Length: 271
Ligand code: SAM
Image 1 (cartoon, helix red, strand yellow):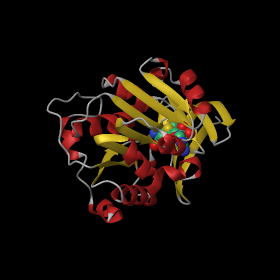
Image 2: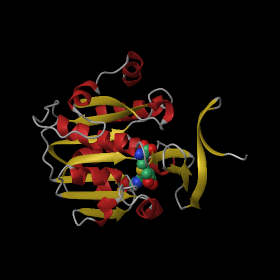
Image 3: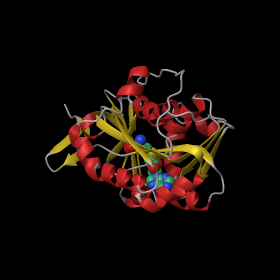
Image 4: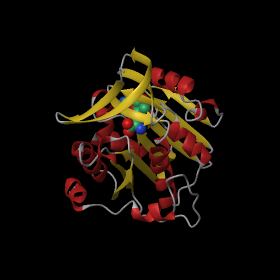
C-alpha cells in the first residue's frame, strides 16, 4: 500500500511527519508557499514554506494562549485589538469571543486569508464579523503609520525569516509601543525555545529595549517543533490578573499562573 506523508524538518536529523489522506492545495504566492493537507490524526493541516501553521485539532491551544493568557493577566479592556499576521483568523476569532468591540487584523498575504475562509470557516469566522476589519498590508508599515491606539497588539507571525523577519526587530517593537494605549499590552509568538532559540532571543531582547516588563510563557502545542512553544509579552505595567476568567479548552486558572514558570535553559536564552 502506498502511504503519503508530509514532514516538517526541525534539523538535518529530525522531522515530524503526518500521514496524509490527501493534498488539498499547493500555491506559490508573492510572499510564500502555502500547502494544505488532510491528515489522519489532526484534520486539515496548513503549512507555509514547509512549516506547520495550524491544524484543525490543536489550533485552539495556540489561539487561546496568544489571546486569553495576556488578556486575563492584565486589566486591559476588551475595546480595541490589533493582530499582525494571523491570516488564518484564529487569533481575531478568539479576541471576538473574549468580547473585543473592535479587532483590526493586518495580514500581508491575502491568499492565506482566502485559503482559511474556504477550508477553516469556523477558525476564520472573525473575517465575516462587522467587529473585525481585515487589512491586507505589511504589518511593519501599518504599525509605523497608524494613528490608532490599541489595548492589545498581537503579533501572530510566521518564523523570523522572509516577510516576518522585521516582525522580530527593535524598530517594530518601538512602533508597537507607540500604537498601544497607556497600560496596553503586546504579545508575540516567540518560537520553540528548543529548536528556535533565535526567535525567542530576538523577541525578548527587542521587547526589553522598549518595554519595562518582558514576560515569556510557554504552552504545549503537539504539532509545533518539539511541542514546547513560547510567547512573549511586553508591557509597561506588571502583571495584574483579572479577578474573573473564562476557561477555554486548554486555558484555565492554573495555566494562567503556571505558564510563566520557565525551565532554566529557557531563562538562559532570554538573558
Ligand atoms: N500560528 C502560526 C505559527 O506560529 O506558526 C502563525 C499563523 S499565521 C498563518 C502567520 C501569518 O503571518 C502568515 O499568514 C503570514 O503571511 C503573516 N505574515 C508574515 N509576515 C508578515 C508581515 N510582515 N505583515 C503581516 N503579516 C505577515
